[in-house]
Image (tube, rainbow, N blue to C red):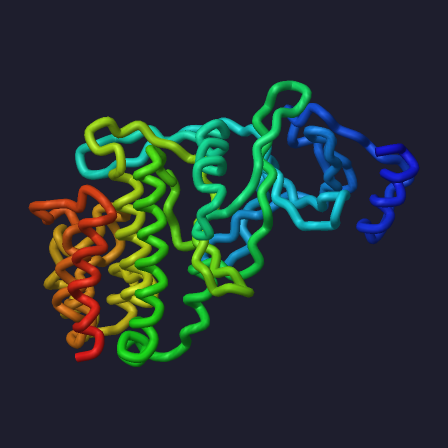
Amino acid sequence: MLEKELRDRVEQYSRYPPRQIRLIRDTSQFMEINADDVLELDGKYYLVRGDEFEPRFGLEGDPKFWVKKAIDLSDGSSKIIKLVFHESCYMGIGEFRIRCYRSPEKEARVLDKMRDDPSFMHGTTVMDDAGNAVRIVDRIRGPSLYTFMQSFKMDHETYFREHLPGLLRSLMECMEAIGRLHEAGEVHGDIRTDHVIIERDTQAYRWIDFDFAYEWTENPLGIDILGLGNVLLFVLGKGFYDDYDLRACGKEGLDVLSTLTESDYSLYSRQRIANLKKLFSYFSECFNQVLLRFTPGAEVFYENTEELLDDLSACEPSLSG
């Protein structure tokens, strides 16, 4: 693209066109890449609009300096550009201490393997001049599952009887997609309620953000399966509940709290109550037994999505009872 043409395109898509265009071909120093910079990647040009944010619990959250909002200057389409960033952490699951880490290469593989699957975000991976694996992702318009769930303002029983059946069916289709990912030899690595986007135009549930991997040789799919259980707990409960929530309910809540044992809490997040039957007397015993298989007291854990989906399918009729 000639310099004049590039400047014309920038002026077309920028509210305040910069006096001078800064062209970047090496994205290694992502902290120094700012709004109005132009990335040249694999012969295409992208106007940076700023950093993406990681929204959590209804808050805007912190900036993700390695993830840029951008516009493809060839057609004006909105992109998310994920630059190479390495970090690692440990999470405890029962007696296991599991290392989790960011892997741009793993996300690139998932984008390639699931490129034709409508239940996943789509994009391409290109190398910048320094050999960094840059992922250029199509933006999905719509709320996250977490945000969507905040729209249900009614009490839990009304939600459970009137809204959950349709929502559960969509969630199960979303879980089936994770099964396809596992069959392709990959894991998601960071399954959360804000990593499912409900596409506005199609209402399709789509998984995003695949750059986390983990080391758990004893249970290679384990973190993903536990993550699905955590999402299921959120959807069945219309949110998460902990001891603080029960204390806020006065004597009735304290009475329930006095009955809880370690086996009533989630293995994935030990402060979250998984035994919803103790919170809601009308809650399906069938679904409750599914949730209890994600607790420290479970004798048998789910090994794959197929087992989980089989049990959920068997529980569906209880929603119409």
